[in-house]
Image 1: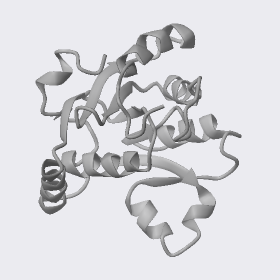
Image 2: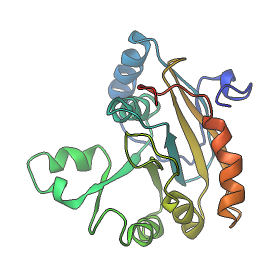
Image 3: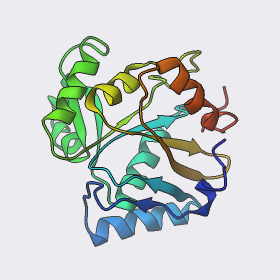
Length: 200
């Protein structure tokens, strides 16, 4: 469950190797906004320069807003994936600044290989993925996140959007064993019973 004793110790702790971004002003401003709306960030990010963040449940566009507030509150240099066409407009520069990585082909075709390549060509890289892939209810997660982490040799850090407790939980951390079904059976219970923005 998301509220195990380790996660509730908070506030969030970052490893020294975790890539950073922002400055005192952006970090303080984001923390002030989180505090103003009654949200907190607890847990731990491992001392690794390359990490895959796995976020759920995904039920609202507010998840993106809270992800950005968490990112700037902690000063983490986070990245996310979006369709390449979204970068071909005046807002493309803003998306790039906020960590957007353009996906060159279709939503699924070559996705895993492209993201492994992104990890391999960078010295530091924190990538956020929502395995449900949609704000609507799904019965089964998309497995791409797992094979990206496995192929890139990076840890998977759970990020739990708990609107009921107004808390962003970071962790625990899992290293892929190579057995997707077995690892998924260990990961998904941490999201069980967590209240997203919208009920399913």
